[in-house]
Structures are given as structure tokens and as C-alpha cells.
Amino acid sequence: MASTTSVSLGQRASLTAGQLPRFSPIWLLVISWIVVGGLFTILVLAGITEDFNLVGTVFFGTLLYAAIIYVASRIVEGARKATDRLMAALVTTAFIVALLPLVSLVSTAVISGAARFDVTFFNNSMRNVVGDAPGGAIHAIIGTLEITGMATLMSVPIGLLTAIYLVEYGRGRLAQAITFLVDVMTGIPSIVAGLFAFAFFSLILDQPGIRFGFGGAVALSVLMIPVVVRSCEEMLKLVPNELREASFALGVPRWLTVVKVVLPTSVAGIITGVMLSISRVIGETAPLLLIAGFTQSVNYNLFDERMMTLPVFVYTQYANPGSDVQAFLDRAWAGALTLIVIVMLLNLIARLIARFFAPKIAR
Figure 1 (cartoon, rainbow, N blue to C red):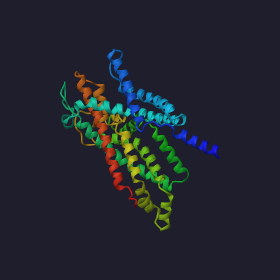
Figure 2: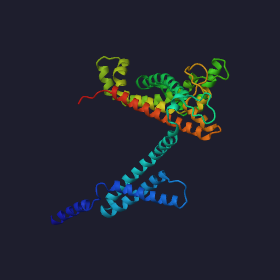
Figure 3: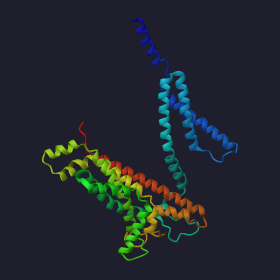
């Protein structure tokens, strides 16, 4: 009995013998970043590298943190807790590595695009802009909003209805064929969608060199539809079958069950999927360059003449600089930053709409 008691006390003591301070992982992570940052600073001062590498500091500092936290925990807390802390550090490292490209992209766009992110950029077009004149991108912003908006109006009803059919009604070979075609469309290169729209309207309207905004919207809708179908299909599948069966038991027809039960339950996920599809196509350049073309003036008519978009604007400013190269680069970065801001605002609006229309759960 005494031996059993001593063994249990020994096990308890081994589990609670030592413990690192509560905030030690955070402090060790910060210290690791400072140490690696100091090494990169020394390399800059020694002339080995030109600029301070912030991304490298965060990455290698996080790896150093994983090693330090494991050794410290092994000494103080034992092998079992050290292994647990090592796995948590590796998960943290994976998260930071996945986040680094996004942070680097956004920070670079903000730093480089801030020089021209001004009122002039949003009030003027590039018409009659020569030399070092500032110019603006209002024509590209209007074109992007109109073309993407039209593509959304065409894609969302088609994609949502297709998803409803596949989940609620589709059975047999037809549903399998539709699923297969949607999977194939998901992998279509964007330039193929642009070529399709260009060839389609060239043949239908008998205009070999046609360029107009509606054609760009059709090209983007070809890319959006499979994304909308897949995202909406998965969201509809998450609706519990018990809700459908309860509605059927009350004598409600299937179509009304879909409208009153299934769609309101999954509306938050559906809106998120639609926003993902918009984010997927709003930055496409190749299809819009083919069918929408580019122009230096504002064009409000989707069905007539060329229409400029922000991706094409960024591409043309960067690929075809004039005598003042820096002015063109500043406009390109400002256009890229504007695209990021538009996508961010659309996602915020989608979250607000999803929260407003989401079913209220009784407390």
C-alpha cells in the first residue's frame, strides 16, 4: 500500500515538477525574432546584403523559437511536455509561413502604392496624359465594377440554381454529367474563357475584332460559375436532413422547403462562396485583355466600345512605361492597391450581409 502511494505521488510530482512561466512562449518568440533581426542587421551593416530582410527575420526567427522552446521545456518540464510544446511551435511556424506571403504582398502594395493613392488617382483617367502628368484610374475602376457586377449577376443565379438541382433534385446520369462538367470548368485556364467569349461574339455579331465590356463579363462568368456551384453545393449539403424531413412532414412542397428552410439556413455560406468567386475573377487580366480591350477614356456602356479594367490598367502601366518610368510604376502599384481595397470591402460587406440574413438561434 505504501509502495502504491509512493508511486502515485512520484507520478504526480513528475507531471507537475516544473513548468515554464505562462507567457514564456511569447517572450521566446519575440526574443528569437530580435536575435535573427540583429543578425540580418549585422549583414546589412557589413555590406553583405543590401536591404534588411523582414520576411527572413520572421521565418528564421520562428524556426529558432521552435528549437529554443523545445530545449527549454525539455530541461524544465520534461520530455512529454517538451514534445507537446514542439508540436505547438511547429503549428505556429506553419501558420506564420502561410501568412508571410500575404503580409509581404499587402505591405509591398501599400508601401509602393501609397505614392499615388490620392484624389487625383480616383478622379482622373489617362486620357491625354503624357510625360510626367499624374493621370488616374477612374476609367479602370468603373470598368472593373461594371464588368464584375454584370458577371456576378449572370453567374450567381445560374450557379445557385445548378447547386440546388444537384443537391435537392439531381439523380442519375444527368447529375453525374453536370458534376463532371463543373469539375472540368473549374480547371479551365482564364485565357481560354477569354478566347471563348471573343470567338463567340465575333461569330454571333459578325465582328472579327470586337472588344466590349459585356464580352468581358461573359468571360468572367465562365470562370465564376463553377466556383459558385461548388461552394453553394457544399453549403447546401451541410443543412441537416432533419430540417427537410420536418418540413415535408408538415406537407410543405419541396420547392418551398428549399426557399424557406434550406436557403435561409445556408445563406451565410452561400454569400461567402459568392464572394470567393468574385475575388477569383476580379483580378483576371488575360480574358479582359482579349475581349474587353484597353482604353484611356471612361466608358460607362458595357455593350459598346472598349472598356478598361484595373488588372489591365496595372498590366499596361507596368509593361509599357513611358519616358517617366517611375510615374507608370506608381500608377501600377496604386491600381494593385485599389484592387486589394475593393476585395477587402466586398468581403466586409458580405460578412455583414451574411450576419444580417443568417437564421437567428433562440437562446
